[in-house]
Length: 252
Image 1 (cartoon, rainbow, N blue to C red):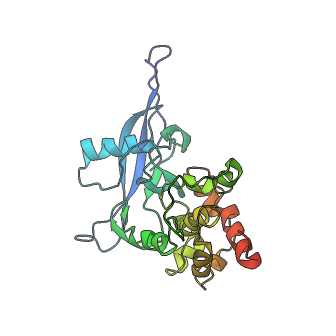
Image 2 (image 1 turned 60 degrees about the vertical axis):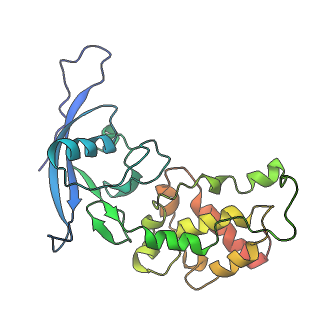
Image 3 (image 1 turned 180 degrees about the horizontal axis):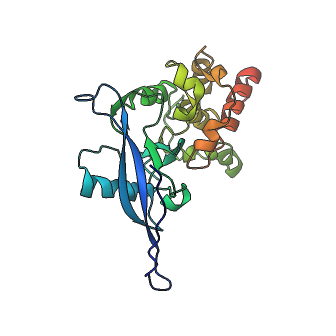
């Protein structure tokens, strides 16, 4: 089925245009379905609408059984990561008009994690990998009596990786992660990077030892999928390379 963008030609000058689009959504209910399948939904959207707005229309007005995660709807919580036209994106940040609305817009769950229902996946393996790299400040010695000071230069060393919102878009865009359920994945390495290069932290050696595992940082094949998928613009591949360099040189 081919969809066409039908703009409202009766709109007043300056008004936001409206048009009809088709969303082709992968559906799966383990209680009744043997395998995932696609269903088409036709909705009318505004030129300013995101894919999340279209999904809300479908759930609220057409099919209440459609299941997906979302929370803040402002690109901060990261809960609505999904595959839109074959690419990992946040539904709340993706404008419908920017994803070729003249054809059916394909919406699928992110890959590499078990699908629980429709667009909802089991995030536990992802979060377990994150927990495994110790994503918290590790310090030694006596408890300080004042703030732990840090120069602006030291702070900038790991600034990029503080932007992560744990959406899993990078990890679930990685071909190695799809095929190897034991691989930590890009996000866990980014989470470790944030603390490895923090001048206030004393746990870098422990984290590097964890990532030196056969399923750790060396499994990265540098395809740049993770960097392309990150909705926050984090240079994920660069962070992974810096962790590799720290392992080889013992400098961090």
